[in-house]
Amino acid sequence: MEDLTGKVFLKQAELAERWGCSQGTIINYRNKGLISFFQLPESTKVLYPVSEILEIERKYTKNASKTKGGDSKKAETKKVKPCVSAPKKEWRI
Image 1 (spheres, rainbow, N blue to C red):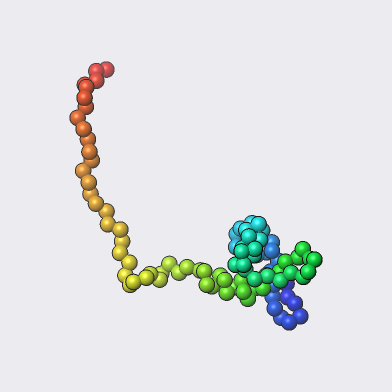
Image 2: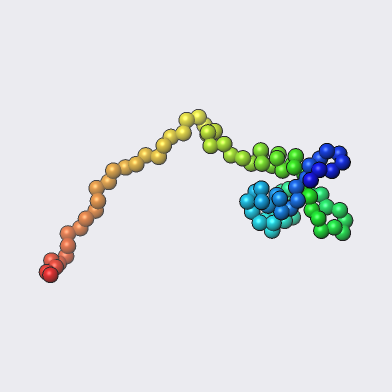
């Protein structure tokens, strides 16, 4: 949805679908102050500015190729002999 100033907004359902969560989760983010929104007084319609949504996505998108402190080391595996105890009784079938 675009207004007269050229700003683009998403509806609550559209944002929830984009982020793969419920509308209730979007409401929780909004109530915690994590997302900016626009709502006229006494209106139930809530709009979210796309420019700020894109900024949030850019800020919190993790890049798997970046590592802290240089080279990442792989986990080492140790070879261990199995612990097998002798049977206490011999079984006959």
